[in-house]
Length: 133
Length: 133
Length: 133
Image 1 (cartoon, rainbow over the protein chains, first blue to last red):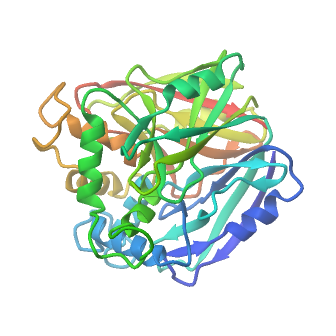
Image 2: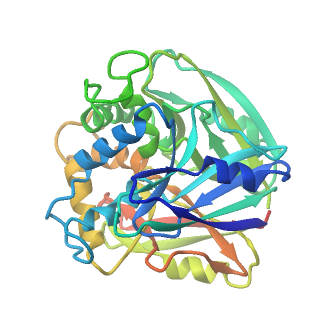
Image 3: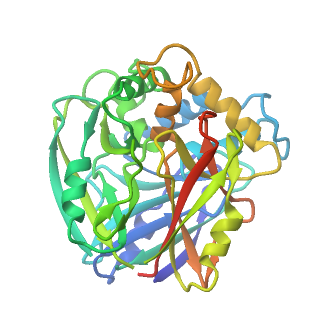
């Protein structure tokens, strides 16, 4: 298995596009599956369109669905941080993308993004792994 | 890696059962993992029971959680289409199913379904991939 | 492919930590991907922190987002059971975790948990599979 950990500096943004790093990782590999994994308990990975407003729309949706209010049992970190720990149950930290001849088979409008509501932690790790089966 | 792209004509339905096509794809393959992937930015894949009302229940849940209202930044397509671009963050376009002796190890009540809120696009692609590890 | 089915007795709890069983399963295997799969139509798998209140927070979030009310078409089982059948569209029954030298590469605060809102069924199966690629 090929595997690599990259560091993502998300500068407190909710959505950070990591498609370029994923494409770099797969370059020269053959046919297989790319696994994208975030080893953090307050972040997820998603495939969305970027650059047309959906980052802001996703932020709005998360605020409505999982508000940063004082309703959580988890009390570490900033107020409302308990919300960040619920996020990965709905936005999974694990996603798989098919790869053909070393190229990700993403759709035209799909980008691989880190989704991170936890502004306390601007540095994140992401692990890419490739199995050729 | 074995891989195949199928075309799904979902006729504007939210939920389209693709279990039969997945079973066909796995037939004759041995032990491994089936990856089901939708290369579209406004659709997801899920495992739910079909035929007992859950398709309608899922539609209702999506309408409540991600309403087709005029609250989105993304402005392409029909009004409220911005909602469709948020969906894949919560209903992932990627799912993996175990396969033993060429048969999917789905539970009795699990079906593989395409979840597509975007009525503008009645033709969809789904990619099946199989790695035997 | 290595694969094993374990039985989980969740005693009607929403969240059951199965990290220990996953670690046991991977012991002695090399580099690859661990697939965790729940063959049930009313349960999911997630990676969250356990032991600091997030189990309760997740329960609260699910009750807010997918209330156990009389609004579902699906009518089998206990009242509100239709909700349980919508859950897996949002909390997927499939997750993949990287494994290096037989050890899961989970983050410090990540645990693998079964998420099961269906109190009618206290016995659950979980299938672990490992592909080395």
